[in-house]
Image (cartoon, rainbow, N blue to C red; front, side, top):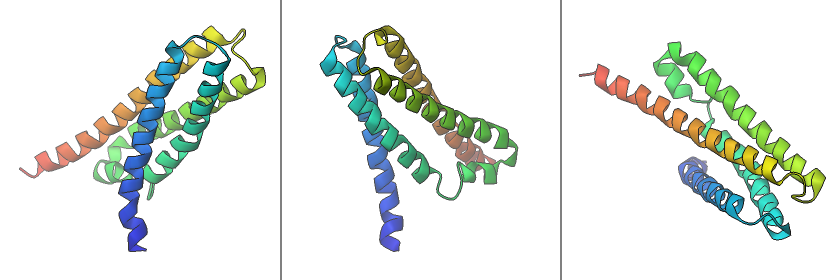
Length: 148
């Protein structure tokens, strides 16, 4: 049991690092020529993100999503709820984009639309992660500052 608890931060760090790499790969693929090879790699990266994002979220949500923030500042519940809703919406959007690619089997007719949607999704996903970190940092900073 202790091994599982001790390995969770390590697994979470590995998952976050893998997400970071996948986002970089996705960004690079969106700059590549739109051909069959790029399409195959794009699908592979999206599949990996679809596998990784929920695992990362599940690990970060053990015991409740941002529960430590809500415990310290119950009045921040609405902010945490908004982040939770956004997390779910981002994952749903990612799955929909992947299904769209799967049903078309090529970039034909989708190339610009898919590229634009993926860029927008990436920007929203990164902004979401940043907002999460800022909220957690603010909660702990305010708690530490309150003790002075």
